[in-house]
Length: 157
Length: 465
Image (tube, rainbow over all chains, first blue to last red):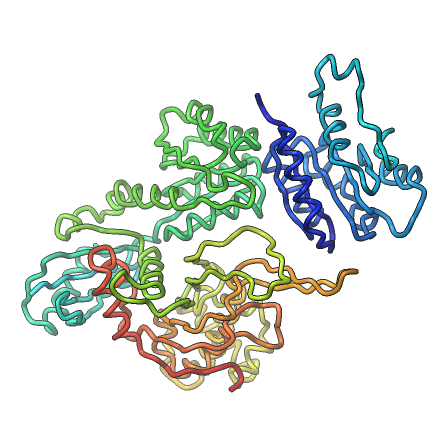
């Protein structure tokens, strides 16, 4: 079977190195091909990696509160680079301070992200939505729609 | 007596070095002028006569050669993303001693293809996509090359998953499939491609360049000259199983048209809080600055640092400096025989060394994050390299060599440029490094011993000492 390919990394000047490794393992376990760009990744690096690996999705992590600035214009750059259809997720502590998640989600979706995940979202939630968005859920799963509870106000639309 | 004759066919000179293996000594060396128009054979004969005058009539057990004649090994290279596979492919070609005439990324256009046909490269290296990654672009490019009428050998070293389809598209072409230069994102695998480049160089290109007649006289043309340099430098740094090398080093070959920099060092970050960015770099790395040289590459130096800085450094006034620029432009074979042009050359050489080593060495950027200062390193950290080797006519005969080489060192004004902090300077006075690279294939121990003996130490010297 052709595995779906993900590019993941921590954007901006953020050096949180542990969480992204955990996600890498979780995604790999779930059957994805994963390119982990690590920490302090620029928008351009995400895009270049996605082109070279023919990625199906880019997952951007940010934990230091400045994600909102760091991801600005990323969708437009991806469009420009010929990645018009690529799936883009963002998650972590992506804004400064405590803000109502519904508003945060709205702002990031407006910037072109397909899914926005709140702090503390378990990897299973990401995996579920990845499978859903990439058309990997089988019939039974879709019908039962046994999606995990988006416990901390996860990325449900 | 086991004597070996080592020959370096250059584009302007043929250089001979006679070596005795048992005593590990250089018996003599000679050079003869060769031009594109004269037969390489004539140059070889003249140089042989000259050498005979020094060594007497001796018998050679073997005659080995390297060549950069007729413009060196000219390659065109294509990749997908400029910073990723295109860069990996360039790195592979340079490390194999080739001259990368043109580097393409993404889809080849009509004008690219027209340009490729004009360049008429000796090898085309086609890359793009990680294994299982993007296949669209490399297949598109393979199709375009197939239809272009390009005759030269093509090496495919891109996405493994698209190799069969590419082979189908390029059926009838002289095609070899090699492992991907970047099998996974950020992972370099350039050795197999380099081996293939060398094989093609030996099998086809040597013939095409009229060197095959010479090949009957000598035991074999082993490799392109820059690859011989890289081999010599690697041997000098790492040693053999019987004898230790001298450790990490950097080498500078300053020429009239280009400046080559070699580094044999791991170059990993020295501080724990440093994050590595960009592609991993080869342990034995070669870069070529095609726009930086003492004569044909003069304007590149002027463009980069400006006339003001150069005339200040040369202590010539601006008008005088410009006069010499023009003079060198009119006659690129101009030699620094009088005081003014020596001052002019000093400034050029110093800045050429500064620019080329700056481009070769890694860079360190400082980031202020909410979690404190963080560092990101791209390329190799050469601050702990303690040896710099100087070769090339523009350096080895330079009167103020030490001062020139000081420009290769770490500069506190440019703290992000990771050049060696301090270093001993070794000078290739007898011009024998490429010969030792060739000899290293046959007898690395002797080649190492000769280099240790013949490279002249200019005494330790540190920046602004």
